[in-house]
Image 1 (cartoon, one colour):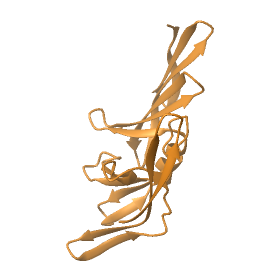
Image 2 (tube, one colour; image 1 turned 30 degrees about the horizontal axis):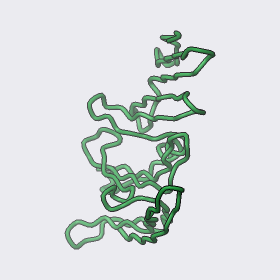
Image 3 (cartoon, rainbow, N blue to C red; image 1 turned 120 degrees about the vertical axis):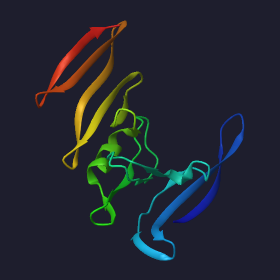
Image 4 (cartoon, rainbow, N blue to C red; image 1 turned 180 degrees about the horizontal axis):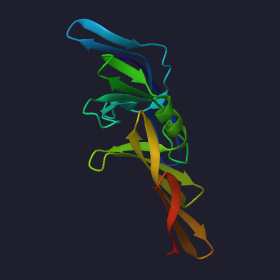
Length: 178
């Protein structure tokens, strides 16, 4: 993995702080001294640190028992998204395979792996206080939405809507005010 860093000073009215810009252009996967696979021309741009692994993570995204790679491509916005690259390990091919579906999902939400329930969750903030959480399961080579939870402010209360995948269709299972 090749990292380039650039420090810049950012001022606010109370203090100065250093933001470290990190760019990862290349990832090389090796077994001892043998190159197994390379990912080139990634062109990431993040404000992160070594402690945060520069946006690089190893997780089992498809719950097959093998670690997969994710790499944040650039900082997300106020909606909580984390645009990232994803490569899932294919044991039959003996290499990582790019997963465009997770990449598209990360453009609109912050994705997390929940190994306990074997689901990927996507969090998206909408406006000031509304948000949604989408739950995905990996089936037949793709991530399928199995549950959608949404909180929407309406007047002086919060509307909660839950939809779940039942018999191949998303069905509203809860709709109430809190």
